[in-house]
Length: 391
Image 1 (cartoon, rainbow, N blue to C red):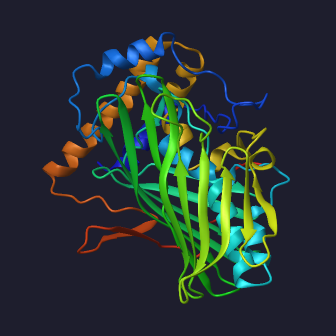
Image 2: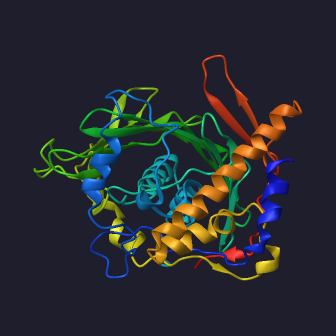
C-alpha cells in the first residue's frame, strides 16, 4: 500500500484546517497563541536528555510544541502570503535593467523571511504530502519528496508574468546545549523567463536560543546570483547578542556587486522585520527597497473554493484533526491525532519495504549530485490552479 492509498483512507476527515500565516509581532491581526502554558519549562524538560551536538532531524516533538500547520505550508506561505498591496514578485519582472531586477529580487528574497515563534515548530511532513495554493495568477505546489533526509520541493509559476520558482530544501537541526540551529540546506531558483534570467539563492538558518534569554531569529549568509548577468548580492542576517540584548536584532547588511569586475555597486542595510535600503556607491543615493509592514502584516489564511477538488495528499487535510485540536488546546486529542498519522505512515513504510517497492514522487524528479546536493526538477511546466486560494 502506498502513501497515497493511506491518505485516501483518511477521508473520513472532511474538515480542512487553514490558519493565518505568521505576521509581524506588532501586527494586531497576527497569529494566535497556539502554545501550551509553561512552554520554556516544558522545552527544557524535553531537551534535558539530549546531548549537545546531537542531530535533531529524527527528533519527534509532542503536539504541545507544534503550531497548527505542516512545514510544507510554512514554505508555501513565504511565497504566496503577502499583503494585497505588495507587488514584489511583479517588480522583479518589470525592472528596466539587470541591476534593477536584481535589486527587486533581493527585496523579494528578504520577503520570504518570516517571523518565527519561539518554542513551537511545524509538523514534519509525511512522504507524498502536498500543499497546493493559488494567489491570483501565481500557483504554488509543494511535495514532500523524501523522508530521510526530510526533503521538500516547491514549484510556483505565474503564466501571465512568465515567472517560475523552484526550491529544494532539507533542514538539519542540531542541539548545542543552550541553543538549536537549523541549517536549511538546498537551493532556491527564481526564473524571469521574459528576460532569460535565473537567480540562484540559498536560505538563512534558523537560530533558537533557549538560555540565558529565550529567542529565535534567522542568521547566516545568503548569496543571490544571476547566472546570465554576473550580478550578485551578498547578504548577512545578524541576530541580537548572546544575552538577547543589543541593537542588532534582525539586522541585514550586505552588498551588490558585479562579479565580473568585483565592483561594489550598492550597499544593503536594514532590518528584515522593518525596512531595508540600498545605497548607490557612485552617488550615495539611498532608497528603501523593502518595507516589512507593507508586505507581511494583516496576512489572511487561504480559503477553500472547491472542497471536492482538494487533493487527497493536501497538508491541511492530512493534519486537520491535529490542527483543530491544537487550536482548541485539546492536548489529549492532539496527541492521539498526531499518533494516528505518524503510526500509519510507519506502517505504510514497513509494507513498502517488505514488498521491495520504491516510492516515487508524483510532481518532481529528484536527484543527488556526487557532492551530495539535491535537485528537485518539476515534472509539469506550469503549476495548475488550486481549489485553495488566498487573496
